[in-house]
Amino acid sequence: MIPVATRSFGSIGIFGIKNMSRFYRHVLIEKHYPHHCAVMFDHAGKYLWEVLKYMGIPVEEIDYNFPKGDYYPTENPFA
View (spheres, rainbow, N blue to C red):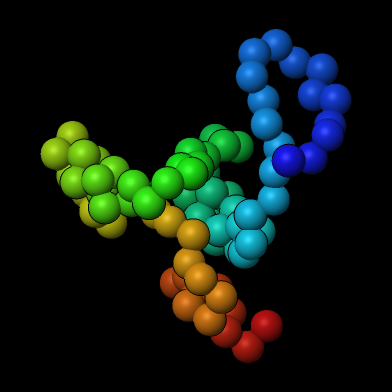
């Protein structure tokens, strides 16, 4: 957690996640997402994946943070 004065109402937390800058550039910005995403603090991806499919969201629209060495479709592997 990073101590930052947000000067906002509601609940806001700021923290760093490894390789998140790559996800931000190649998923959130390129797909024109709002400036936020959901973060889970448990191994719940398997269940969230099934719930999103059940809700009718195409699996191609479910994005996640790729580990270092796995490249996003628009990421330059030579950069």
